Amino acid sequence: MEVRSEGGIQVRCDKLLAPVIPRTRLQVWFIWVCSSILLWTCLVQLVTVGELWRPHFFERISNRLSHSNPLPLVIEETVRPPPPPPLLAARNYTSNGFLKVSCNGGLNQMRAAICDMVTIARLLNLTLVVPELDKTSFWADPSNFEDIFDVRHFIDSLRDEVRIVRRLPKRYQQKYGYQPLRMPPVSWSNEKYYLEQILPLFSKHKVVHFNRTDARLANNGISLDLQRLRCRVNFQALKFTPQIEALGSKLVRLLREKGPFMALHLRYEMDMLAFSGCTHGCTAEEAEELKRMRYAFPWWREKEIVSEERRSQGLCPLTPEETSLVLQALGFDKHTQIYIASGEIYGSEWRLAALRAAFPRIVKKEMLLDAKELQQFHNHSSQMAALDFMVSIASNTFIPTYDGNMAKLVEGHRRYLGFKRTVLLDRPGRRNSSEVPS
Image (cartoon, helix red, strand yellow):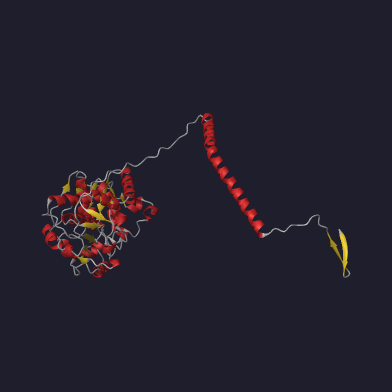
C-alpha cells in the first residue's frame, strides 16, 4: 500500500497483485449458454434414472409392507355400468325434408306432442329435428329438450324408424338467411290430411316448422303400426336425463321405506283454475285474479266462463276439501301415506288444512329432499313435473283429481307396466270412470 499526495490531499491506494481482464458481453453469453446446457443435461439424466429406479423402489416398499403387515389390504372394486345395448340398424330411406317442431304447453302435453311428431315424421319419410320445448307459457320454463330428456337415447332408440338430428344443417338455418314455412297443422287430423296436404309442402319448402303441436294427430282411426310407434316413443324413447332419473328414484326409495304410498295428482293449481274458469271455493278477490290471468294469455280462447256451469259438466278439478271427502269415501284412512304430485297449490298451505287433518301423512318432494338437491330444479317447472311423473308411475295407487294430460299419460304408463292400481273418479257429463285393477 502506498500513500500519495495530490494537491495537498493524501490518497491511499492498494496495489493490485495481477491485472484484471475485463469480460465482454460475448463471454458472459457463452458462459450462460454452456451452464444451461449442462444443467438441462443433468436434469434429463436424473429423470431417466429415476424412472428406471422408482418402480423397483416402490415394489420393494410394498413387499416389505405386505410381509410386515398381517392385515389384508382392502381394495374397492369399481362397479362398471352395464354396456349400452347395440345400436339398432338405421332405417334406410330418402328424406323428403326436415320437420321442425315447437311444442307448447306443460311437460305432459309436450310429451304427447313429441309422440305425435315422431309418428308424423315416420309417415311422411321426413328428418325430424329434436323438438323445441315451450318457454313462453305460464310456467316460463327455460328448459331445453336435453335438460329433461336423454337426447342421445331418444335419437338412437328410434333410428330404425325415423332419422332425428339435433339441429338443422347450416344452409337451412334462419341465421343464415333461410326462411322455413311456419304453420300449425290442423288439430285431430288423420293420415290422409298429412299425406295429401302437408307432404306436398316439402317439395317447395325443404323445412316446415310446426309452431303448435298439441293434439295435432287423431287418437283413433290411424294405422296400428303408427299407434305402436306412438307408444314406443312414449314408453321407451322419452327417457329422462340421468340427473332427473337419479333424484326421482331417490324420492321413490324414501317413500317406499315408509311403506306403501298413494300419488295424488291434486290439480288445484293457479294455471288450471284460470284456464278452466273454475272458482268454486275461491274468494271474490281470488276469482278476479284468476280472470285477469286468463285474459293475460291470448292463446287461452275462452275468456268469460261461468264457473258453476263448467263445474256441473265435470270439467273442474276437485278442491282439496272435496278430495279429502272422496278419499275417505273410498276407504283410505289416516295412516295412508300420500304424495302430492303437483306444483304449488293455489292458496298454499291453508287450502290443504282439511286434507292434512284427515290424512296427516301427506308429503311433498320439498319435504323429502334437501333444498340443495332441488336447487337445480327451481324455476324449471317441467323438470319438477318430471319428478312427479316418476313418483306417480311407481306409486302403489295413483289418483288424479282432474282428467288432464298428466292423468292420461300416467294412467297409460301404469297400464303398460302391468295394470298398476289407478283410481279414476266419476264425473257428471264425462265418461264413466272406473278403477284399473292391480
